[in-house]
Every structure is written in structure tokens, then in C-alpha cells.
Amino acid sequence: MKIGAKTNLDDIGVAKALAKEADFIEIYYTSGVDYKKMPKAVYTMHCPHHDFGVNLALLGSKSGVSAVKDSLVLAEKLKCKTAIVHTGTKAPGASVENMIKNLKGLMKFAKSKKIRLLIENLPYMSNAGTHTTSLPGEYKKIIDEIGCGFCLDFSHAIHSAFAHKTDYKKVITDFLKLKPEYFHLYNTNMNQANDVHLSFDDENGNIDFDFILPLIPKNAVVALELPDPKVKNFINAKKFLKSKGAI
Image 1 (cartoon, rainbow, N blue to C red):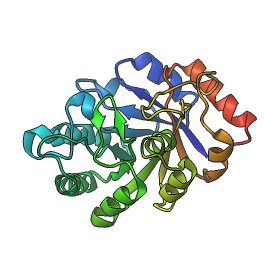
Image 2: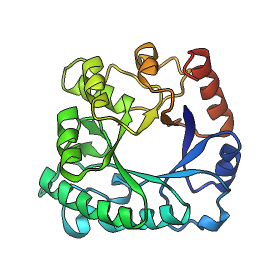
Image 3: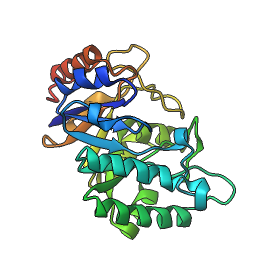
Image 4: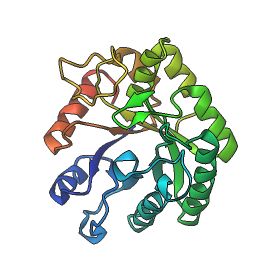
């Protein structure tokens, strides 16, 4: 199992420390960063989403496609093999059809950069609003339509299940049928619809690791999404996973 750390690029020092401990670094795109200052490491790209005004369920400038393309240009410079995108949120004029159209264009652009594009499952709601896709069947439609890959975020799946009043184990099992190529893992409070990123040992978290961890393939690529991605927290998270027999 390859264990990576997720961080943004506004602190090069953190990235340098993580590069010594993580198998890879998943970068949350930050504009204006000099990639030449980044430490030598294996990188994956998390493309911008609502924080940069991106909503792929819209068309035109409101979609934020240009920001996603900017991140893919950076991804190519950092020799990323994969890049992760969010789908979109409900808004006037938003639709799954628009999303598919935008993703098809981004797939073509990513392919020109030799980057594999993955869509990440989202909770039903977040601080960005209500998402247009949150259930396995909705993502299957997109994947079948455009041929992209899939990133499974376990906590997002759990929060989606809570919002839809359905069993999180079934939702996760159905997401696994989409053959995820990449995973996001962190602790959270399962008893609410809104997503929250907690440390693995946070007593406020209650994610069902005993159910989740055995589902992750031994050769999987797993990014740990910690609330504070300092290297000591990453090391502690790896120790936790080792204590559970996951690594």
C-alpha cells in the first residue's frame, strides 16, 4: 500500500518534510506557487473546486474549467500521473449534462498532458452547498459516459449515506464496484451529513475503521487527509494504521 499526504502548496517547508516520510504527496492546487521550489517527490494533483469558484455543473466562465486546466498544467510540470476533480454543486443552470460536457473536455486536456483524470465522490452537502452527485449510481453514469477513473473518499460516502438515510456499508460496497484507483482516508463524525476532517486518534471521530480498512487493497494508493498536515501528524496517522494491521 502506498501512503501519501495531502497538503496545499502555500507552505513549502511542510511539503519538504512530508516528502521524507510519505510515498507521495497529493497537492491541493494553489495558484501562483513556483513549482521549481517544490521538493523532489512523487506528486498527485487535487484540482481546484469550490474554493476557487469551480463548479463543473455549470457552463462557461462560471464553471471554473480554466482553473482546473491551470492545475493540470502544473501537474504536468510536477510529473503527476493522476489528477482528482470534484463534480459540482446545485445552482441555477447546473446539471449533470453540463458536468459531463466539462469533464469530457478536461479528460481530453489531461490526456494531452499524459495525466489520468479521476473523479472523487462527494457528500450530499458541504460548505460548498448541495452536490449534484453523491451516490454510487450517479458516479457510475459519469464514469461510463466519459471513461475517467474513480477516487473513493470513504468519509464522503459515509456522510452521503447519512444524508440519504441509507446504510453506509452498502454505499461503500457499491462504490467499490466502480473499481477505485485511488483512496482518501481520514477520521470523521459519522452521525451527521456534513463532512469533517479529524485526526485518526481524535475522540470526536467515530469512523468505522474496522469495516473500512480491510476493504482497501494491499496495493492501493491512499492519501491521508489530515486537518493539520504537519509531518508529525502524518507519522502518527501511519502508526495508527499500522496498529490496525492496515500497513
